[in-house]
Structure formats: structure tokens, C-alpha cells
Length: 490
Image 1 (tube, rainbow, N blue to C red):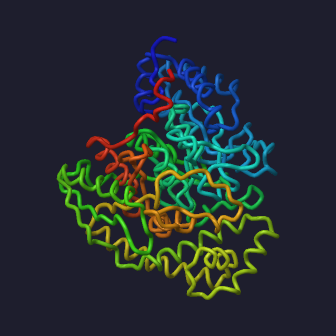
Image 2: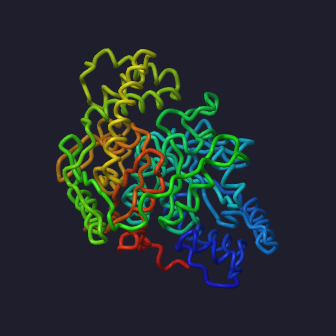
Image 3: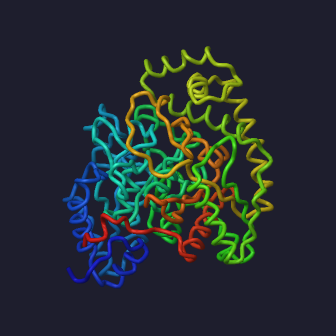
């Protein structure tokens, strides 16, 4: 190996070193594989690999770099969330029935990354059908949090955030329907971008199941990058953006309104009676606001979009549960639908919303679509006055493993009080229901030594504004930290 390689450096730094030929793509890949061998047995983040194909791709990257034909992400070793199809690799979506399924075609976002020169190492673990907030399944087992193996890294992109946090890959591709990028990024201490809906094609992702795919992106579902640095998101996003035709250039990404905190207009929504938050989480959100204020931002702690949190959540949750139910086995879907008649339309419990969403009718869908349009207009008016909104990514920090079979019987501990497990959806719903971009950025550690982050929501289509605020926080001392168990691994 021609140089010592810091595998927890940013993807941008690794790319610069590759182009400067301080080490080769093959060197970088072998270092990454050695790190996987050292760390993955205890973490179970990466659940499928093809090292021969990866080595061949790295050699091709070296040839391109030497010839001056390097592509935008040339030679960077990546893993891909197992929700996405990767040609030639097992792509199960966490479903035992798909454990041996090997697609012949990449998901669109994967194809875009491959065309940009990445070296695909393998797949990262997910829950069954990406339908849980912890990453475990009968096909591939349990993924552990790199900060505390007794805890989950979150889900559904938990294998992805673990791989990034530990330097087993340069970055990852995740998906987000109910916080599936933002919550595990918060729990694992990395950056995760929920993109504006429609910016990145989700064709080739599960859900829906492979046999029920449509060319149109599923409602609410997005794909986005997971990284160790805010700048990496800016490097990767132009590659990912665009329709299913991977040869078509992506849309022009709106430049951020501001590059520094000076004059930044920030709304702070650190807690809400409808969505209780553990004190350490809300304090981290306030700390992010304080850091921006020191840089010259104006913080408004009373500003809110002109909407009711409960209504925004109801609209989102019904659609979310409809999307999930669409791909469930018919017997399971019918069992959930049958429960709907026992709930009032005014019942906002998670069980009620799940059952009513699973029984989605055309009339209800049309009503929800109209309500969503009204919510989007209110958000647009809000972002005419504010540049970003800071709020919690989730109600708690990383949680202990809890695989109780009844998801509705599980509980979170929020300030010592039990809360429903599906409260993970509450703070995720604000951005997702309105198709807004939202960044989960690491801020600091809890008293127990677990990562705490902030969710940065920006106006529709202004993904780079959310990224820019993540970069501001990074410059002020927040950002990625190397998990303690990985610091001695070379």
C-alpha cells in the first residue's frame, strides 16, 4: 500500500487522494475489506459481498484515473442498502423469501452511482421490507450500533449508517419513507439526507415488492446519501438526481440561499406536546440552534408553519401505511384492513392509522391529496419567511434491541415515561408528508455516549440549503465523530 489511508475521512478527501494518486482505488478497496473483516463480525452491517467484482471495478477505476478519465465518484468503495437492487448481488429487502434473489439490473440510483465510478462492495442490512426502526431480519440477523452493541443503529437504513460510521465504506445509499435515513443517521452519528420527493428515482427499491413496481416513485418514498461529512452530500447528490433513465442529466439543484450562518433565518421547534421528545434530544436541537446563532443566525423559537402537527401527522401516516400495506402479503394486508372498522375516523392512535391506511380507498386518497396540497402551501409560505426549520430527528437516542413480535406493544422511554414505539414516525412526518428535504446532522453525544442529532428541514427542492446548514454546524464543532470501538482499527 502506497500510503496510510484514513478510512473515516470524508468521501471528498478520499476522492482527492485518489486523484492525486497518493494511493490507488485498489489500495483503498483492500483497506476497506480489511476493515470489514475486522469490524463486521461484531456489527453485522454488511450482509452480502462480491469481492472479485469489487476488485475488478477498482482496477478499472485505477486505469481511468491514470488515463485522466476519472468520473465524479471514481474509485470510492460503497455499500448499498439491501432495499435496492444491485445487479449480480443478493437483493432480499430483508425478506427471507428473497434471500437468494439476484437481480439482473441495478436500481436506478445504483446505476447512477455505478456510472459515476463507485466500487460496489456489497449490501447493508435492513429490517423485513424496510418496515421497522431497527435493522434485523430472519434472513440476515441483527445489526448492532457501533457506539453500543447493546443498542440498535436504527432502521431501516441501520446497516448503512453503521457501515458509514465505522469507515467500512466511503458513503452509502439509503431510502426514507418513515425516517429510515434520518433516524439511523441520528442514532449512529452520521449525516443522512432525506431528499425532496421525486428528486431521486426510487425504481428498483423495496418497498414496493419487485413484482409490483411502477415507474412513478411511490408516494412519500425517497432515496438519499448517507455520509460522514456534509460536503460529501453535495458531491453525491448531483449524481443521484434524475429520472429512471440513468443517462439523462439530473435536474438543476437550487443553490443554497446562504453559505454561512450570518443572516440565516432559523425557526426552532425543539419539542411539542403532540410529539414528546427526550430532553437530551431536544437539548441537542437547541445546541445546534445556539451554534448557528453564534455564527450570526437569527433564531425564532416560536415560529411554526400554520398547520396543526396532529393533522400533518394524520395525513402522512395514512399514506405511509397505505404504501407499506400495498406490498404486504395479501393475508397480512387483509388482517390489518379488517381492524379498520373498529376505529373512529378521529382516532389518531398508531393502530387506527395503520388499519385505516391499509384500507385506502380512491375517495380517501383524493381527500388526502387535497389536504397535502394545502399543507404544502402552508410550508411554502413559512419558508418565504425562514430559511430552515430545526427539529428533532426522532424522539430518543439509540435504543436497546427490542424484537418483541407485536410492534404496537413495544415502548420507547421518553424522559422516563413510556411512549408508543411508532412515535418514531411523528417528527419524520413533517418533512415527508409535505415532500420536503430534511437532513439529519450529528451534533454531540449524550451522557451515555450515544450520538444526538438535529433534523434540518428546508423548502421544497432546496436540498442544498439543508446541506449547507449541516456544513455550518460542522464548521462550528458539531459533526461526525469516530465510534470508540473503531478508533484502533487501521
